[in-house]
Image (cartoon, rainbow, N blue to C red; front, top):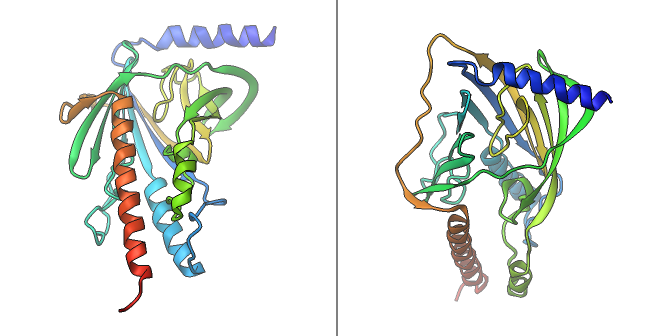
Length: 279
């Protein structure tokens, strides 16, 4: 009975405000990824080397994003920051890949556009938004000034998904067959949303709840909202990107997998050369 009353209240909030004219806002999110059980791929490394590797990975995975939204569209962009140039010139990219991309969501058509860069080439990923089968819970908690409600869902992820990041590829050639056999797995997603901001948006690909999602836990990654600005005096237009080769998510993932395989083979070939020692 209580869940039914809660659903009615949330629905009333959503209908009353979600389509308000010129309603717009911004939410700042910070992502954190656990490195507790990071897999170094069986390589022999000193503790100091491990610390350097983990520090580099954390700097690439733990970022700040800004979600700009109106009643039906949103952009989710990494906050720009000045970074020291790297040896290979990749800057904030991880091994030549732009891991974040520039994500835009269109709730009216239930589609998204994600502009990503891979070794200097831009891709425009255009596909349907994933529809999460959210299960409402009875738990609540306060996040900042907002009362939030819990919802859970399952999500299918691949081995290259940042939320399940396990480390660099293994060196042993016999492990190649094991890597090929890896199948997508399901993880539980826990979201906390507030009907006080009645927009069906959230960080990254998450959406579909009767209120803005302020926190998401998925796999090893937690994304938490740290700041919200509603109906600022200066309205910001949400312009979808147009630069890049248009591909579906499946097509992009295939290209990404092939590039990662090339990098792995190049990396393993370099190690074999180093193992020969001086002549």
